Structures are given as C-alpha cells and as structure tokens.
Amino acid sequence: MTSGGFDPSKDPQNPGGYPPPYEGSYPPPQSSYPPPQGNYPPPGNYPPPQGNYLPPGNYPPAQGNYPTPPPAFDSSFARGPQLTVGGAISYGWHKFSQNALTWVLLLLAIAVVQSVLNVTLRSDRLVLSFVFTVIVTVIGYLMQAALTRGALHELDGNKPTFGAFFQFSNVGAIILAGLLVGVLSTLGFFLLIIPGIVVVFFTWWTFDFVIDKPQDPVTAVQSSCKAIASNVGTIFLLALALVGLNIVGALVLLVGLLVTVPVSILASTYAYRVTVGGRVS
Image 1 (tube, rainbow, N blue to C red):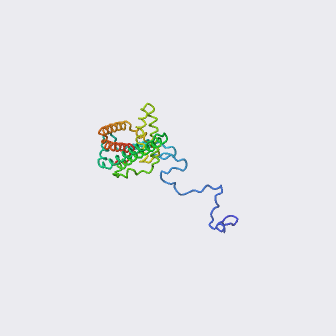
Image 2: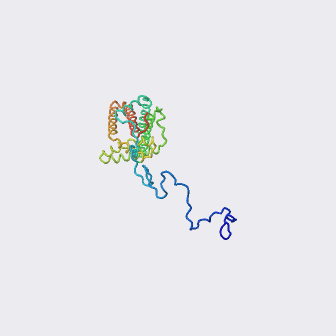
Image 3: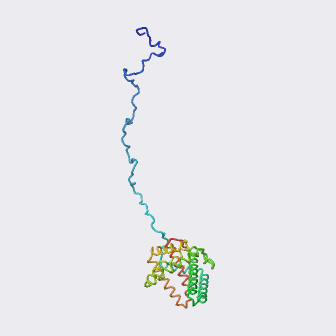
C-alpha cells in the first residue's frame, strides 16, 4: 500500500505492479547473459581475410608451372608428311603403275584430240585464226584439268576410270584460271623470259586449288603462290626433277612421255596435297 491509498498491484492497467518503462531517469536494463564466447571479432571494420585470396578487380597473371599456350595459327596451310623430291616421284610412279592403262589411254586420247584440232582449226583469216586459237587453248585447259582431276582421285584413294577424269563442274572457273595464268605468263616472258618462268612456277598449282577446294581463279592463283612460297626450295627442286624426267621421256621417241607425264602430274599433285595438309592415300 502506498501513500494516498493507491496500491500499484491493484491498478487494472498494470495488474503485476511492474515499474513504468525506461524513460531516461532509470539506468538501462542490464542483461544477465554473458558475452558470446569464442574468437569472433567485434562488429565493425573487419581485417582482410588471411590467405592467398585476392580482392576483386585486376588480377595478376596466374603463377605456377602451367605451360605457355601455343601461339595463334598464322598460316593458311597445315603441314602433313615431310615433302621430299624422291618421295613425290616415288609416289607418282607407284600410283601410275597401279592404274597405268587408264592413264596411257587418256594421254593418247588427249594427243589425238589436240592433233585433230590443230589440223582442222586453221584459217588464213585473222579473225578466224584468233577464234580457232582460243578454242584450241580452252580445250587444252580442260584436258589439263582432266589430268589434275584424275590425280586428285588417286590422292583420295579412288582409282579413276576414264570418265572420272572429267568429273568437274566448275568449267568456267577452270577456263578463266587458265586464261589468267596464260596472260600473266605471257607478260612475264615479254620481260626477259625469267619473270615468265617465275610466274609459271608460282602458279603451278592453280588448277589444283580451283578443282580441289574449289576456289575462284584469282584466289586460286594467290593460294598457289602462297603454298609454293611456303616450301619454295624443295618444290623448286621437284620442278627441276620433273622437267628433266619429261625431257628423258621425250627423247625416247616421245613414247616415254606416256609414262613420265602421268608420273609428273601425280608427283606434283602429291606435293600440293602434302604442302596444304590435304589427304594423301
């Protein structure tokens, strides 16, 4: 009972008789709970974590014994087997000997066609003579393309029949590529011969790129130059060896050319495929 007759325990608003809430004059309530145990740091500015962790941002290059990544591939041509002069000629002879009759018959057919054209397509008139020359030249390009197509069949592991030599559809690109190489070569031969020989050598594989890839004439000429330049020493020696081989074939009453020409084409196509990393069967 308090003075004045008021008993807090009898207050209907505070039946338990608790003191009024803290309004400033009372000390703050004390907690009977002990502080948390352990090595927990107080709230606030925490130190950086220990260890080898790096903060987000610009990370330094990783350390360790990891191998250096390879450089970017900087060539259009992948390397295959090692190209050698003897290996190319041996390959040409091996493939020719396995399909000699077909190659010989094709060469005989080409020789007959060209002979007939040279005899029949003649004229004393300048315009007709020019037209006939173009026709003979274009047919010559197609015959050369047929030999290249047959050699590519051999490299693919397919022994070509007579008709398989003419399995190409991009006739227009073949003719344009032949004309482009012919014009460049002619201009080169007018410049004291040697530039013409250089043009003929570096455009040697133009038909290979047109038929095998296939590429347009301008790209094929560029690809031939780049491929030959990538291994110019060995390819130049191969070219000299094949020229010598065909000279020997021509000396044997021209009959030897029925052997040396196919061997040369097969050897050249083999060198092309090895240089560009293509299939060799």
